[in-house]
Structures are given as C-alpha cells and as structure tokens.
Length: 141
Image (cartoon, rainbow, N blue to C red; front, side, top):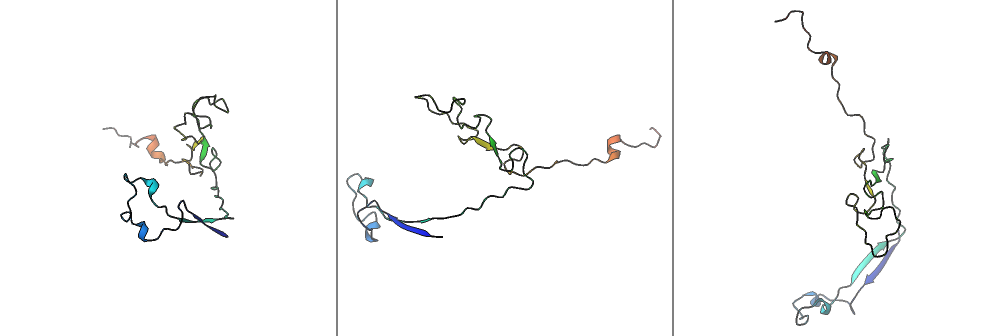
C-alpha cells in the first residue's frame, strides 16, 4: 500500500521543545489562544485501501436480507419527521430529525435484532403424559 506523508502547520515554523512549555512565554494579557504557537502535525494517510466486504450470514434473515437494518417506520426512511412526503423541505423549514433512526433512515431489524441471522423457532418439548393430565389407577380417594 502506498503511503502519503504530509505535514499540516498553522504556524510559521517548527516548534522546538523549549517553546512547548506553556509557562515559558506569556500569551497576552488574558491568555488568549490566538497568541499561542501552533504545533505541526504529521499526518499519514493510506491510499488504494481495499476494504473487506462483510459476509452475509447463512441463512440470512428473511426481513432484512442479512443486513440487520430495515427502513425506519417512523420517518419512512427519510431521516426526518416533518414533511416526509416531500423530497426537499420548503423554504425556511429546518428538519426535525427522527429519534428512532437518529436521522439515518434505517433502524435495526426487529426479527433478527440487527444480527442479520435467521432466527430459529425457540421452544421446548412437553412430554405427552403431562399434556393429558395425571394418570390415575382407577381408584379415587
């Protein structure tokens, strides 16, 4: 992978160890941040990075198709609760973001609880003799 090295600096030059002590120089009468020397930051970014695709579970959930997310019911997938039928808001209107999906338009699947896996039937087996009731010997007390 090819790396790109760049420096970002808001000041006029490098900052040495002596000027990094905040008590070396006064920064104006009120101690404003605009007078403080800035540090240079070395930023390393990666280019041509390939992300691994998330494998869908086998078998996937029948509702969300294995993604774990479904369209939000409250905002109809728009992310906002006002004027959901319009693509754009009218002039002067601010969006009221949906609380269920936090403005994303998608919420967790209720069938698989967001895992994407198909849930099987959860239950237990009751023996036949317990379903018919207690067995008696023909004598009553």
